[in-house]
Image (cartoon, rainbow, N blue to C red; front, side, top):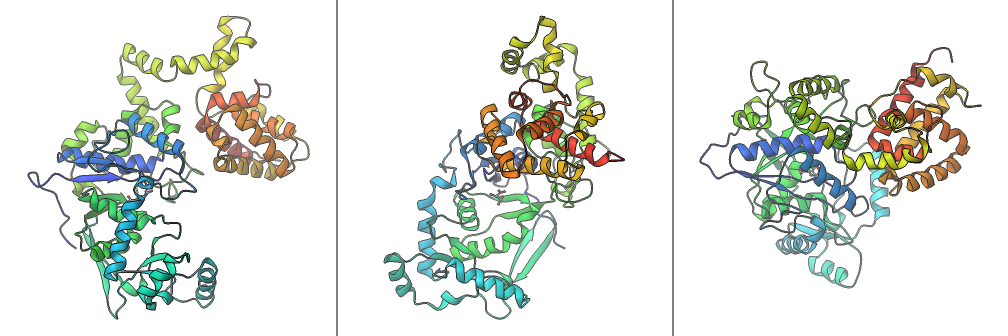
Length: 500
Ligand code: GLU
C-alpha cells in the first residue's frame, strides 16, 4: 500500500480534464467525474480542461456535443479551456487534431515502438474465433505483422494497401507494466504478455481512443487523470504509450462507478442517466451537485449538505472512497425537497419562472392549447400532462388490457423496444413531433403493429390519459426524459398487474 499522492499547495497547480465522447445524452457519470475534476482544480488553483473525444465518427454527433456543453454549463462546472472558450491547446475537439496524432504515430514507427499491420477484418475475426474456441488465456492480436520489414511495410502502405498501426508491446519473458492509482493508494501491475498490441491508428487515418487520449493528455499538460474505474484496464496501455514516447505519465485516479440500488452499473434501464432528465424534471443544479458530491465522498462527520464552495474548501482525496457509490434517487428527492423549502417565496418564484414556467416553454404549450380550450383557466389542466414525473396508471390500466389480442408480455416487449430504438434513431432522438411520427409509423410497420394500437398504448403511457391531444405533439411537449420515465413506469405497472 502506498501513501496516496497528495498535491501540496505551492506545487505546480494541477491541470485536469474531462474528455467525454459526444455519443448520446449528457450522462450523469460525466457530471460526476467532472465535479471531482473541477473541485480538485479549483482547490489547488489549477485548470479544468474540457476535451471532446469524437474520434468515433459513426457515433459522435454535433448535437450530443452541444448537449454536453449545455449540461455542464447548467451545472456550473465551468471549464477554463475547451470548446467555446479556447485556450493555448486549441483545438479541443479530437476530430480537428488528426494531423497531430498522425505525426505522433510516425514518431513511434520511426523509433520501432509501433508497426504497420495489414491483417484485415476477416483474419482478425477468424483469429478471435479460434482463440475463443481453444479457450486461450490471452486474447487479442497474435503479432503476425510484428516481423515485417518496416521499409517494406512502409512501401506497401505508400502503394495504397490498407493497414493499421499497432503498438509494439515489449513482450519479453517477465516484462510487466505498473502504475500507481493514487485514489486507491496501490500499484497496479500487469504482465505485458496480457496486453494486446493495440491499434493506434485505424486504416481510415483516425486515431483510436488510446492514442488520441495519451497524446492529448501529454500535449495539454494534464497532470492528474481523474476518471471512472471503467478505464483502469486501459491505463497500462496508456503507460506503455507514455514510455514509448519517452514522456512522464500523469498521476491516475480512478473513481468508483455509479451504481443502481442492486449494485449493478448505473444504467438507463434502472435509473435515468441523462443530466437533462434531472434538469427537466425540476431539480436545481446546486442540489444535483451536492448530491453527486456525497457519492463516494464524505465531508467528515455526518455532514451531507454542502455547497460546491464548501466542497472545494474541504476537499481531500483521503475522503474519497473508490467503492462504487449507489445513486439513490430517493436521497436526491430528499435533498431537493429540503432545498426548495429553504428558499424564500420570492426566490422560489424566480426559480420556477426560469425553469418550469419559462416563457419559451409556456409559449410552446400555449400554441398547443390555444385551439382547444374554451376558457383561459382551462390552460393549466389541459397541459398538465407536460409537468411532473411519474403517472398513476390505475385509472386507465383497464384500457391497456383492452388493447385487443396483445398479451401483457407483448405490450411490455413493444414498449421496451420502442424506448430503445428511438434512442438509436438519429431523427427521432431530437424528439420533434414530425420526426417522432415518421419514426413511430416505420416502427409499427417493422413490428407488425397497427399504428392505432401502438399509439393508444403510447398515449396512455405518456399521459396517463386515454384521450389526449395529438400524440406526437404531446410527446414533444413532455420531452424525451419525461416520456422515457413514463414508458418505464408503464412497463412497471404492467409487470405489477395481478390476474392478467
Ligand atoms: N473519451 C473517454 C470517455 O468517453 C475518456 C476517458 C478518459 O477520461 O480517459 O469517457
